[in-house]
Length: 581
Image (cartoon, rainbow, N blue to C red; front, side, top):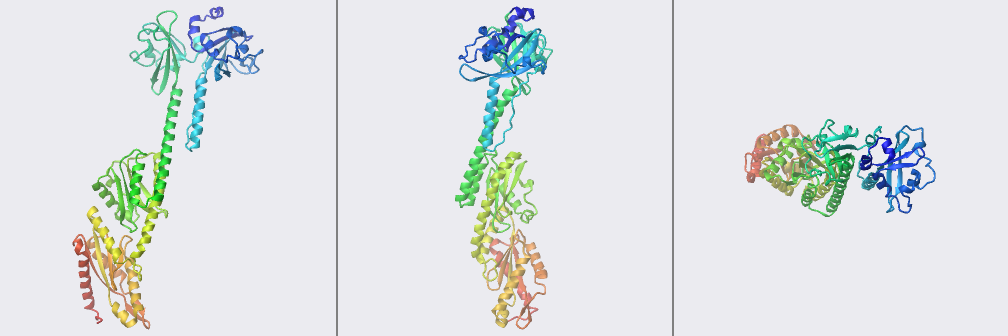
């Protein structure tokens, strides 16, 4: 302790400082060490049996060597003071003890500051293990190593060589002394009492020294200042009833712990998503009921992206018709508005992939088009809310296989549809027309979308058969079929229901629109059309047409009314043409 007196260093404060301090002379002889240094060195393996009092030189005590270390920073004159070295020692239990040593000149002696960084190294190794685990699951983790800033200028006085903020206070918490680290670590440098250093106007809540520093010795308290964290260690002053407060920044430690927890949550979520994707894939291989699978998908997927409101619209094989819909937290009226908007001409003609947000019940929404294997739209997935890039990637992972599944089911429906076609013309038959009319009637009830029927009768088919043969009659029917099919939209249906009778189903069309269609078809489709028969003879291709729409006529009378207008048209035709038989 004589050396401490010579250096004007307070022995009590020297012993109370919780950072290990060893002072050696230029010959590596240990002059003195404080209690914290002795506690650190006491952890060295018992097999060495080297004690501080038995080791006159630093290299004896730390490494059981008989000569100075070759890489000793003291002898390395190429580096400026202070100098630094990291060493690894064996603890009594066999574990490693990691020490960072700072070497500073202190008059004619050398000051060794020992920092036990074992916990920091262990924490960094734990982070490294978690990073490797996350890489195995193809989930990228940002690696952030704890960077402890202890490159502080070591000045003449011992306290100012330490990186921790050290403050001495009296029993009334008035500040008596503070080191220079306080200026960089604490938010307030002009404080009078210790709590003011932390930017607090009143004493800290649940302060360990509230009832005296004698009861608070070695207790710790954490403080959050903005986004930073400080750990305060309290010690009793050796001089009076006051205390010694040591503040250490633990922001990086706490953020690393938070990062570990965040990474664990990410891994857990990704594992859950992978499991759900596997379950969905298994269901798609086994489940034949597409509606059941879509509902299962909603129950499975919505909790993942933390929403409870969604809707799914699935196309039918017939353009302009829906196979089915499914919804969560959307009432039937709202779903009807959404479906009606999806059936609008813009969407069905592919001028727009999604529906207007004006028809959705939420202020913010997300729409994802379901795409089949052929790249065409097979449906629409609607979600409440906006989603970040990561959640959008999760949505994409689920809806891509879902679109392929629906596409396959639609292909199966198309194969079944072949039984509904006319053998001669390739048009739909009466059975398919009846089914389509039922679907349109259901759309009228649910979404208030009108439709119309056009009755078509081929003029003079009997004459073509009788005079020129059935081959000419078939040619006449095929010619009419081609003109009718060319004149309608993809959402409409042309069906042959008898020998010379056809019906056209015009979707989303009122009575006035159907009559406009008839006029256009006669003027553009059947205007001056002839086919060659017999010996280069020209046979006129004409039809009689009649229309009726649900906005004017009852559904049950629609075909009857269309037939009535068609026969009126036929009578008008034969007023100008000679009737055959």
